[in-house]
Length: 337
Image (cartoon, rainbow, N blue to C red; front, side):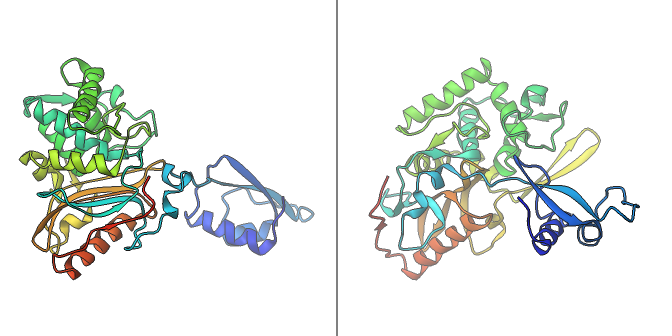
């Protein structure tokens, strides 16, 4: 398939600027003058010196977007009164369990790093010594999504530091190391996660590992609200998950980590617990406990489109609650799944 010179020039400019990745499953062949490639994309290929060679075949690889489970199942076609960008959402009163807003709250979808909230609950309730030193090993390296980590193999941190980084900075190797160092090992830890979910009545929830990198870690907004309520009972989880930043000593270096949820730095929010999550299959996810208009609320946003849309959804809910002067009329979408 061949494209016009203007279309190719624009495409190559995006690649050169880093706006498009250079690796993909499908290649597109283009036919374009060498001078055009040099001027638009500043190609690093060897210049063609022959006067008779005026055209060159170039390959531009584009990584296709991977749709989330929510997109594939049509969750985003559900309309709601707040025009949320999340495919599923739930807002309820923590004290009374009154549902204020519901959208596809029973839909079972991947939950990404929201998994780490259950990981924290298991570690905390096991009362394992937080000052025990754990070592990151090759077993903690992500072979599911091949994601990067600032914690190199061989890094030694205490269990408490690992827990802090897993909750606040969503550090995958820290979360995996916590599970691996559980009595009985990783299999026992995952079994404990599923048993806790069962004990809490989270019938739509299933875990296969402690990080959330696997799309087989799945739950519903309704179940996750239950988990947030249970996790909120632990002071250490409240404090570590809402910590704006944290510095740890790794060997002779001091490493600074920041919270993945920028709302914790917003003085207009009173957040008691939070956790973010993202993998392509899950979309952008967010759970929070926060005080709004004098009420303690639990908010769950799953499969949100766009990098900042989950935060935008949280702001929409906050505006709605505040505008309602704490007498909000419960809203439930007609199409529940």
